[in-house]
Length: 425
Ligand code: DSN
Image 1 (tube, rainbow, N blue to C red):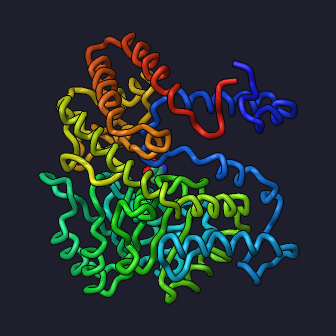
Image 2: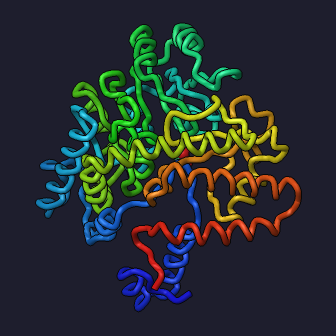
Image 3: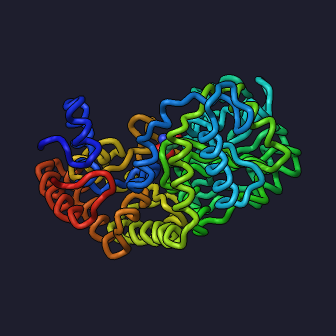
């Protein structure tokens, strides 16, 4: 394949053909595969354009009107625009668009709200939480006394009696809700009632579902959680970045925690692209996309259940499906690797109460945001379920050649769904 399948890589190829070739090859890879990693997406050409600008040249420590370097006239306007759009899309009093990504955003919440050694609570990582919700290998688990809740074995859903009991016993100062492998609606109101009872600050980490919230396909945490964190690149479909949103009460401590507490200069090219993504997120088309993500996930879940897959909680309310392959007699990791060879990209994942190890777990995590962005709908999800089933069966039966046949069929199928930023020459 020759380099130069977009204006950008054609120009880049003159300066750096090696990097241009690799970017083009990645474009082809993203085009030719069915991408089901639940935290990934395809951003628009507009978001790609905003990301690749000369705004990367500028340092801007501080906030609009209060910077430590000169020449901020236009950067201030860009950041103010991103903040105003975040406030409008999510209906919040305050937004900080500077965190470099989700983990730094969550760390800033700790810095603003608690002291090392304080007790915090979040969903356990193997049950669907996130490293930064106090998991032991994360700084947040090392520096804070973290207590974890999970889901019940029979329902795969949060047991709020357990959450309340743990909260009463341990009196956490922060309670995180949300996570990375939760196929069901996050019941912000129930978490808020528990947080209020024990006088904890409720933090909703909506990284996975932010696009669904913005598009009205998932209830909002606003009005329940004082602080809301999110990455900007998952269902929200913006550049790699993050935001912290809050009530007015938490605005100053959170801003101080992001800068100067944790970070230096914001990535202004990212800020511009966040603004562009938020403009897109305020349109009726985005609401259609958000509800189609959920419709696609439900259709894919049905197709998998019909083919004998066990799904944690039995299905999904959002963009995410967690399949337990125990009954299929295949580990999550060999299945994920086989699916990758078959042109279907997802990740192996622990399932609640997984008897296997995190690096060789029982499950697959599957998300429908990226395929929805490409325009795939419910009727396509049955083909996807069929290919997943065929690939998992092929690896179980040691018929790996079949994976290459599936990859060919997937490639032909994907040709009908163009992606921004790459095309055949
Ligand atoms: N890496 C993200 C995910 O895949 O969910 C979480 O940080």
